[in-house]
Image 1 (spheres, one colour):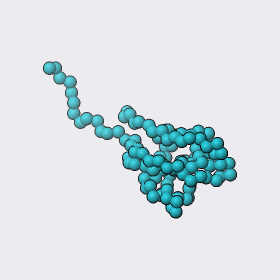
Image 2 (cartoon, helix red, strand yellow):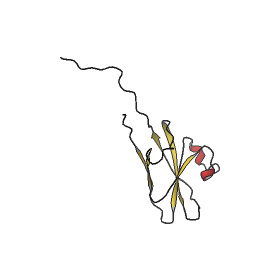
Image 3 (cartoon, helix red, strand yellow):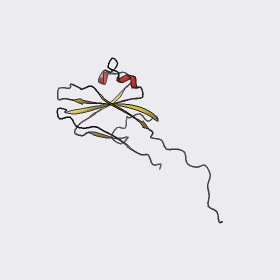
Image 4 (cartoon, one colour):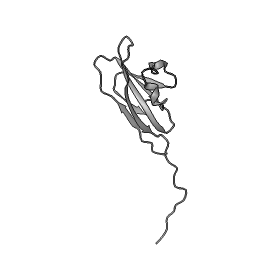
Length: 110
């Protein structure tokens, strides 16, 4: 079984927030104000988060994209009426596939 390092996405709590929504995309332009439409944004994956200010990837978000690469993350605060803030933006490299094992090896007496 290969070892895959987990990633933690975290943010500071907002006192007025009842929950948060975390958005992910490989395309940074999707978060531009004239293109970003929260959950209705085409080409974006999102997850609502209640009662905490972090997500452990991939354990707590199995739908997070598995393709290796740089991903842009947007995090919004959501109040009890469903109003959402503008997103806090960050980005990072994600890779959930290990490299291949060595193809040859052995043990020798020397």
